Length: 245
Image 1 (tube, helix red, strand yellow):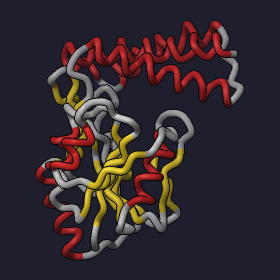
Image 2 (cartoon, helix red, strand yellow):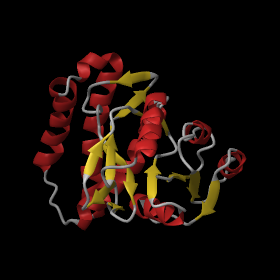
Image 3 (cartoon, helix red, strand yellow):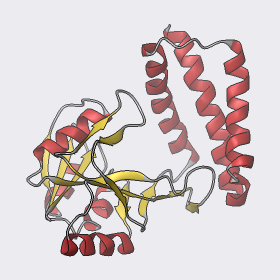
């Protein structure tokens, strides 16, 4: 079992070293860059990755393009702000030695937000398929929330994929602005109606679900911040969708 790791990147000089250095269990690393103007390409190449320049095709399109550039059929896809934990790396080493039983594997994703590991808020375990045979699976999703779709059998790894999200609230606000625009475009494409009831009720429900039902209060101030940002995300995507219609 040989594995090609794939990473899509744009101006990720801060994150790309950590991501690449965590991929020692892989037989090659492919970085698909979509026009970085910082040192992302230089750093990736120095760390042994093969860099391919491709214009932006959307998140799913970009990740499928990265898989197409890989030498091996088994793909381990991570984002530039992610990294394998040591225990996950060891689990993948064992899988390579024993051979795969399934066509794709999920792994839990543990996020660090404002310096704190988040265990609630609906953020954990946040299982994702990230290791898959490209003959049996591919990425889907036109706008946001891209995911791997497979018709094959799915197994589960137990160790964490580490996700290093926002170091500051201003960074989270910038990310929210970008993703709510994409979410609004998806709403418009689906021809969904956004009435005043949804504008008022859905953001409030997003806060209640995140902070109380998903126990965000156990994550301290960071959990409270995530709950407020979930409400803001919901409100902004609906307002933007109404403005686009």
